[in-house]
Length: 210
Image 1 (cartoon, rainbow, N blue to C red):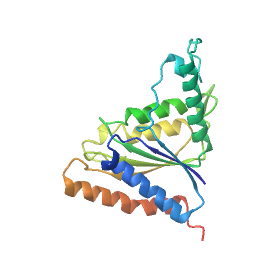
Image 2: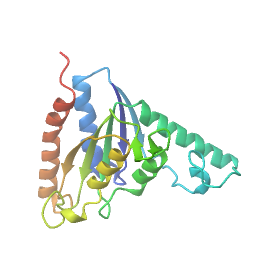
Image 3: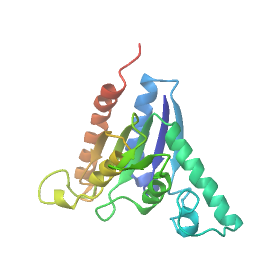
Image 4: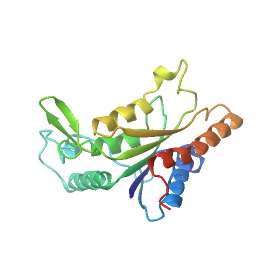
């Protein structure tokens, strides 16, 4: 099993998603000690956002005069999509920022959405080419968006499901910690619930091999 572990929180050691995504990886390794894990921290090793020249490395943009720095970015794009395509499982730490995902994570997503590699255009519309993979999203929110009046403002988990669905990945599971900004007691309860959910999610995806 090849796992791609992505963290995107700006909060370092104070991050719930970093804490929980590490716990997810640890749980997988207890069941599958030979699993190969590639970790990419898109905050510590930030990926440049697309411009016309960078995007031209994998899509026609009308830009064709590339300096050395842009050619290096084209190689970054290839590395990122190759990592993604080689993985069987993605574990993505994705906190909610302003009702959506961190811009650092969005930059990674923009690099791997490549026509002919991860999706294709057909007469009936786009078709995902990355099916068969599984995704565990480790989600954290300051408030409560899973249901209730704020659910309509969730452009984080719903966006991630739609994005990976576009790439052909429909097996998306969420481990969620909510209430992170509602005081230490509520934050701790949300973290505890998230960690308690990990074993069940992973057992459903990857039963023990013993």
